[in-house]
Image (cartoon, rainbow over all chains, first blue to last red; front, side, top):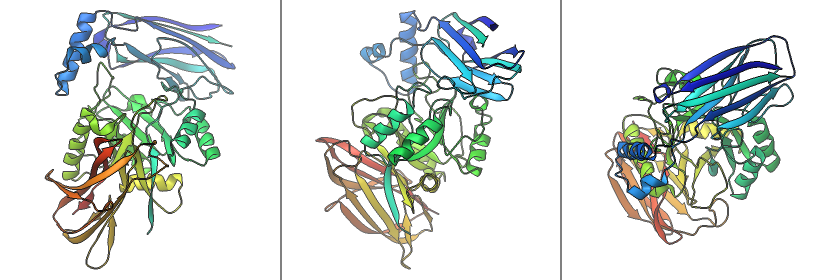
Length: 146
Length: 321
């Protein structure tokens, strides 16, 4: 049964923040299933990406060669997902893939998440914007309970 | 006191964050590389801890539970356990308080790859905390990743480490391979000076006391002796005065040396002014009399690795008060 569906957008000025999206689990259950996706994964504007990489290197006193700058391509958007249970942080999936499925239960949990009892109460999805480089990054989350 | 140095890897990742190893594979690889122990420092999660601990125990390795707070402002490796800090609440305003709480509870918090090329290539990868006083921290990654002595950003880290030491910060000098996957290359390890049994608590104590050096495989024995016969080890604090420095460097066969061949040439004595006095070693040994002023005395060693000139190791200094 679906308990929460989220569609949201991020832009570069929203980088370096934690965005919390609460949802309710109305009765105790055995497992929470989370489907997560954000697109695009890479900054598609190559000219802009090359300029950002050059500026980045200069901050470290490195006047990088064009080949060195090109080797850093592509630049990635990175938005990680955490789940808060009513008792606190249930885990974080710090991954580079932009599409994933996770589950959390008392007996088993996906890597990154703690084995957690799915109690009724206020839960939350937290999306952490480590890097939003594209003008618009669309994120979608769906949460189901079993 | 009898201190024995053992190689550890203090910065690793498993598939509980973005590494490709299971915790069990990580432990097996640590054993195969000749490490005495490792810390699991997954990004923002402790979920792999119990699996890694069990795997390490089965293989006779020392295991240090840990995490890498992977924030927007910098990365910090926390070693020793889950101290209940939510990584999302670690920011420039709270970082020192959190580090202090961890230290009080017996854990270790240290700066990871402080000069790694940061945003937007590696987000939060470099030290952007704006910290002036590192008294709440225990360690600092002077070397990171592959072929560490040749990496430009590691040279910046070395300089910064010395600047911090000259300003009274007693931090253990550590290496972080930032181990995510099996790959070839020249890597290093953090050698921890263990006093007593080779167990987790004594490894953490070595970090807290700064009894450490980073090395691509060459081993260091070093101590200072005063006129009364008191002996001091790297990481110790001692008064201004005259001392005898005894050092011995050895290039091991087997153990943590990755099958590399070493030729030891010089040992350098680096002071708080950044000046280095380079001395030839005889059979890896060097002894001298020193009049030590307030500041620090750091040892580094130079030579060849597989025929290429390299810095071989960097030690936590002796701190002179």
